[in-house]
Length: 510
Image 1: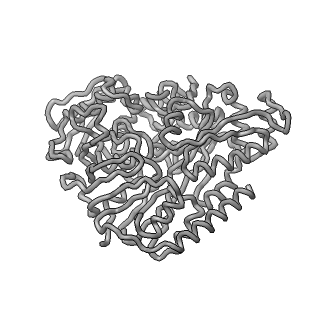
Image 2: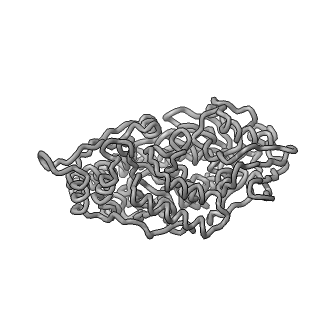
Image 3: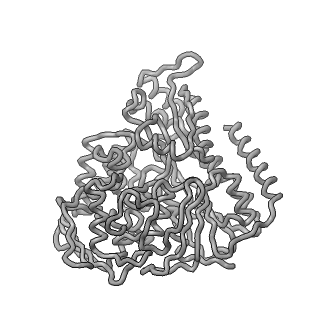
């Protein structure tokens, strides 16, 4: 860890020297340059589940409903809705809504969006979210009726902006190349691994942004991002810089560093079908080997809080009454002994491989984990690839361990089904570690259907206790939302989950 801290110090000093030599750059007075680490994988809102895709899609598309800061549902494309019985939902669409190309948005588009996922027109990891839907009807152009096979407490969540976006009737598998939505911004262009350009949508029914254009520039390297921000050739980044860069940037007269308690969670996931990691004691030993508080103090510079659940601690279904795995190398050693992995030659008990992207934060965390696990006899090999290759391996289960984030989706308890249900192996969800527990499945199924809130909470409490015991993944910490932006941007309101929706109300001083 001391060697790691020294490396951080050298990087910070190098960045400081580089930044001090940079001058002002020419700036397009009408375009915000938003620095992101990787290209969106798929800008079709029915398909894309990676962070850049979901955040940009939320600017381009609308769901039937929206969620406010307290996670309550508010009108979206549907101005109102009712539920005459437990298996019927009726949505009344707004009059006069248009797609960005001028086509009217009607019930036919809503039905196509949902059915194209349900009937296999395109393969989508989101399709299983609508397994409860039996049929969808449109008695007229502004009314959509959902008939369910069984009660589904998460239908509104899965029809909300951010979870889904309504696309035009007939949109097929190539829709991602030129996506058309009804959101505050409209798509202009995309160059893979270079940029995505959007501009304000004058036909938006909800809000017409004051910002004319946004260029999402792909800049994987953190030092380069820092340089772009300092020079003014980059205007804003969210949660993409290592924490050691923040004090340097905070001293720049043209920049603001904004730190907000966040709901974004970083986790460490295991392939539970791996011959070594299928043993729960091995997973528990790894948890006891990680000094999360030390990592938060050093690598994250205090910009995070230890997490005990996927849900934010303020959520009605959250519980802290779960098994804890505080840093305890002695306990880790006992668990590995019990699992049949005594120390061997050179003190090594077993070998594991962790896959990671080229993102600097990911590589630094992997290096720290490698060092901490070595102390208990686990030799951790690191395999680094650019994000698209890394993510493809994660989705197809070609890994032993990896670390990623849950952003926004973990603000609702259906995240447990999406990530851990036996029915949600990819491509039907995000159970990438292929974890299976019939008891958990039954609890989550009951919670999704029961109208009794107390019963639902009891189900989720027990589900969190099972997951904390079995550890198909380790909830590491809630990351603060840290935004660095140029002062020519005003009226900036960060989102706890790191969304880009602040662009809808921010202003750009020319």
